[in-house]
Image 1: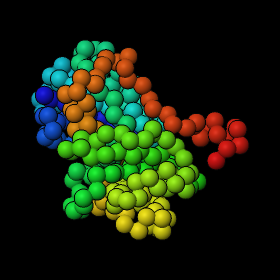
Image 2 (image 1 turned 90 degrees about the vertical axis):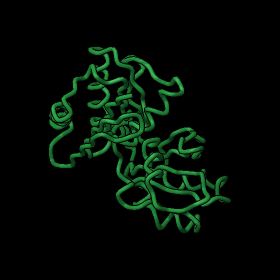
Image 3 (image 1 turned 180 degrees about the vertical axis):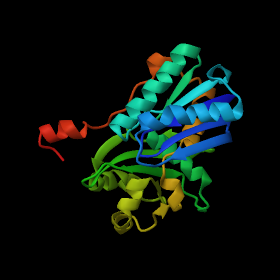
Length: 237
């Protein structure tokens, strides 16, 4: 199965092509350009490099957030258009689930199966997802949420008997606080804290095999909190 995977939920614009779980090509750009300027040229370059067309794909996989409100909308709207033109099915993957799949590449040896994905949402807030690794697939244990980091750590108390594996830039920002609360916490290598289209593609492949996919109507952004403009108008952090 050939998969085109896209992640624009962070400041990195990421596109990958996979054959099942195997990466054929991956391109990531992190520069001053907006995703609206970067995404389509990246996809065009990849298609030309592989001598492929959109209709050659069996599945699209798209990160739906949480993350950058504008970035998520750009990625989702692009993939929705691809689906409408080609009738290729699509899987929606949260950026937090994608980060959980990053841990499969970690060199950390642990008996823990609990993974906590944290994305920095500023002002001591994080987007959080808690997952259990079951044979290299991740089962969501808690509702995805946007909370203050201290609320998240309290939420994780129930898993404190295990060494929780943390991933994401939110884990980097709050590492010392996490270690104060859970001394046996584990953290992935630095490069694995970035959101990438490869993990979105692998997660999408697993979802497809479970029958979890749809058409363009099934694809929509995942917002766990109000936009910065909305929060500013209401006097929130």
